[in-house]
Image (cartoon, rainbow, N blue to C red; front, side, top):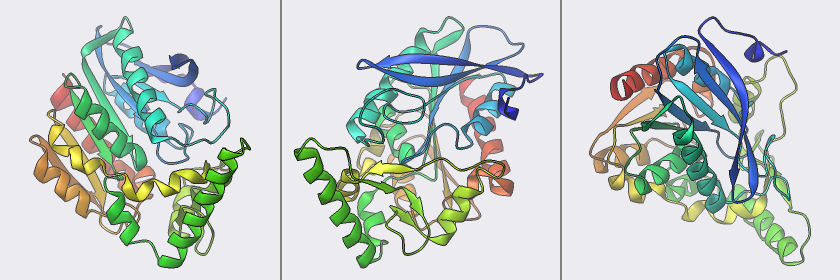
Length: 304
């Protein structure tokens, strides 16, 4: 067993599965070892091309230790969830998976259906905005290093890289038209690679999430790269009416801080916190301790 599979004195984890449009989304359900029911529940999923194996247990475990349920899931086509073709990346379908996860969490017998919080990171940091904007019953939202405005991200992408990614996207669209398997590109890679996030800092940060094991593939279908520049969740920030914590890195050039500032200005109950470092800093080390402590305090404040 891996360390996250071992019993904890404060919580336990079980496998779960829920349905989303006929596909099975694999999940982990964290429950406090000793707490009154029903309890609030935090729903978590990862960013572009990533799965729950990428340190989401570190966050869910802290929430469960604080007395909260936590549901961590993989999108269809990724990780242990079903769906073909593998690695197909669709914003529309991932948002449907979020809604299905919330429905599943609300129906659990030891969950307070009126106290559901959403937790998103990077690409899913925008997904939780959009989910909460459409669901006024969400009690709280956390967006960590969130992707909120594709226009801003596109402007910070070197022209040569943007051109190469566009070509990859068109190649994937052509394969889809011929009913062929997706053309895949890595979500994360070193500088000069054809990855969506191509920098040595990004690659090192990703590898740091898996210090004792071979890191998983981050492959994604390249057609999503044609959509990223037009994907602007920040435009709906004003519709998030619940308490909302946004955490941004001081040197994050993948999801820059400016859209976070705009979201905070527009949403009635949003607040921003900065951590030192780039896009992958909050998953490990000192930045992780800072952001997860803030998250636990925020959830205790608004869910208890």
